[in-house]
Image (tube, rainbow, N blue to C red):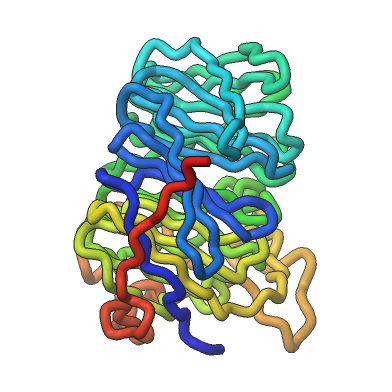
Length: 378
């Protein structure tokens, strides 16, 4: 496996990056920022971009639709907007939240839109008619993030009430809640096979839960600051994270350890995202810059164990071939231990062994030179 390689170092936003999403082909990506704008970037050598400035306050998140035709953004101005990523593209607006809207996500069909807000609700919308469909309630504080599972059968949300909730989009009911003793969730992400959900926490941790047995199966205490963003690689084998310590980490989930530590941003890493094919990933920061990387990670899909809900052995009910790696997980970890600040509690967990990852310093690469974006005006 080769190291990740920085391809572009981009400057265009005038405020902190808040969100990032690739188009289905991986040829373009869009970023959102506290500067009230979203920017669509091209991945070719000529730095061209389109700036979308329809919001009147901080743009908190952005999502490209599965068919690549539209983009949605959400803002502190309480609005949800959908727009066509072209110079003459139209935009429409959804309103229904009564406070800051934090996150946005399309369902797998692209026909529905999911939003999360400081009004303590998660809302579902029908895109074609700009129609409000339903609210998911149960959070008792700000909801920071809500995401559809890849199969569309569940919604995961997290917020300042220190819960990770699973909702059934068909019934609107909360089917399960995971509670954290000390950390509030900043972002959630689904594994490609829809059986695992990861949460980035403001107490410098990442946790991964198996939704079938409804248990914590991996946790990582490898950060020196709150974890702001995370995303699974399409293969399901890797997880990328960005945190307030200014570092991007790539974790090998099959080995249960970080394998790459990427530096170069001059501030907290606030958003990270893989392209749909896993060939690229991008990082955004408080320093207003975007870095586009070639991932160089294998794309072989993980055969993840479906753990038996009974017994401590947690053997796979569908064993992989003997030569295929399987997901590493903590057999003896409890959620209480994962929230414990006692360092001695981690001596037997390989997630917290000394850092043996490969360091990649973007500032020492030939592509670190900043490319100022040229906005397309006609």
